[in-house]
Image (cartoon, rainbow, N blue to C red; front, side, top):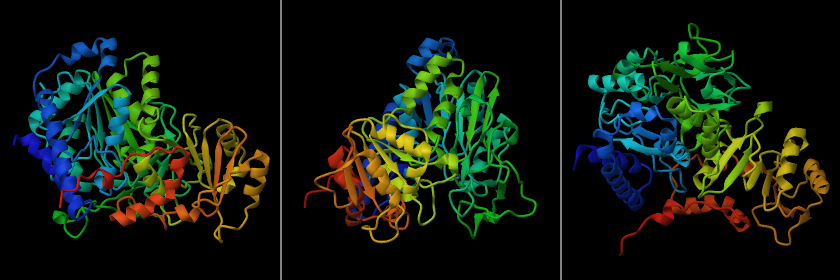
Length: 527
């Protein structure tokens, strides 16, 4: 087996093998092995053999738009670009990998593939953008000749997006150190923390970022979500925590002993720690090329890419790094394509009132909905935002109290005014489901909605509006809460998975389209 094929196959078996038990794990390992071999055979020539001159290609903007070529590092990092979050998948690294982000670039017409060997000048000759996912010390280091090739690529006009993370997790700072020295970018050993109302959890490291510069990468962004991300070089910063933030110092004991490879801090503000607005995103131009540093892998992972403006951030980072010299209308066209709904999944708008600093779908507490948000994103294209999603087929309102908010109420009304739309309102009741909520009751009357003849058993009310849209009432939000919904990486057997899916099974009769479960894709051997 050629080395790059072996690397890919070993990665697939190593990670997928831990995601489920017994025969399921064996089948998934075999699928991962086949995936690795097929990708490798299609990539070896393009990764390491000379291609057309990249400088000449970049000199002709019309040619660039026809085929933007992206290579994602699967040699120095554990990276899978074709394994999307799916029902039955519980492997943390796959759920938070860049597959959905890569799918977004492909929707823009870009050619994306994996780099399975060391970076070379020849292999980078026709490439416009490289993506270095979160590296780890168990993968090969960056050799001197690789760094020379990468620097030449960037100086001559190439783009790079580098994903780092909190502290020195997986020793990524040590792996990136020599290259970042050449980039003149400082690596940090911090976890970016903040205070309410800019946090999604009690740990202070799940944070809402809303302070941005006027840089093209963050243009128009309102909110970006980090789940335990890190800080970046302040001299190239383009986004920050609130002024109440601090850089929680990571702990690296000798030999890494006595702790997890996350090397977390303590989530407490200690004397001597850097305080104030902590930089979390960086962008830098180096001669003709550009580098973007995103300080959190989860931010662009297949689950949280769909939270807040994370998807928009990812697309704009790619556009700036690869195509910054393009006419503005072409960049906007690409952005629209990247933000469009995923073709094989129903688009669901999960309303999140960021403007009020109220978080439901990103909330990690027991009564939050983060687990359900992750669950929906295994099945569908669910996006948590306060931006109206006109193309969405479903809208989920996370609290009855939003029905009394003028902005939210207007957005919900506009959504329901269209035909063939479905809205779920989650109630705030903690008592039995037959209790009444006065806000809900008065709103139903104002809509002139009529009860459906047959009500799904999973809901407490089902109505049809004059426009032909459907409206559903689940009186107790707790039934969808983190307390009653498993974490996305919690191992589940087949019975557990089927029980979980009952929460959304009823939605299929009203047009919900989901992707198949891994449990339905496995080819069991004959007995």
